[in-house]
Length: 382
Image (tube, rainbow, N blue to C red; front, top):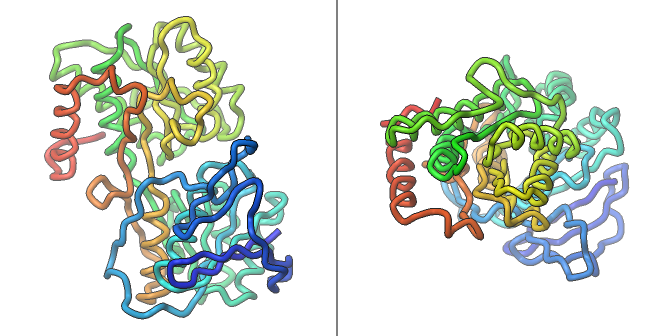
């Protein structure tokens, strides 16, 4: 199934498309949700499954050379991964619709039925003449690499992944999550009651271990500053707990049960939807157990368990998509890399929401000072 979103001035038009790339009958989302002029989906009370276009990132920043004075001609086309409920998919859709509206370009999305369909999805967008083709997540990395190598004159981008060997026509939209993870680690060290916190990852790959590095460095920084000895389970900088999945919440539940049994009262899953299982355990626990979310503000994105989220290490995917569209379609750049940082607003920690009472004013001031020091390059985050 292919969904097309047309960005016209400040409005967004959602249409259904035939699988051959031709426009189908224009449709308006009703019942399950509606699309507002900013590209956000509003869910009604009867809806339990969020629309793929639901907004998950709070801020959209204009980066690069600035907004052009005239609309750009072109199209941004996104291949989503096969998980229709993926929080990252939904955030990428939000960023793409905003970029389309901001720059006056068209946008289209395709939802492959299986992983075997990824290659055909990329090829289909090449045939459609898309200006920029975006892979929504690491799950599409192999298929996107093949497509980029087969179509060397086509502009591609991938969200939240950097290839070991740079691909000339692939823009990598990456995020320095070690920076907000450092802040989250400091926060975890400062608020633990048991003196034990934990982290684990879905995959044993460098982007995930970098994030855990930031977390344990933040805990260590707090220990040095406060003269404490908070222990971190699940990662020591070399060895750790990896589940080999980003999709199975049950695995996350089992890991959380084990960590809690070892005394952990704060858990940071760097594991996509696996972490939702850890949140379920925290919610049901007789002890006070808190979770630090990943990628999106999970207080909002996982409202059933929202009370357990101390904060989240967020990646503002919409910021990266806007940057990619500007660079590739408006400025005509090819390849390269965008790195999201605290300074450019593409990463941060989420508000404390219902956990706010546990955060003293003094700790808030310390976190703000640390953020400034990290942005100035005065603190090492891994």
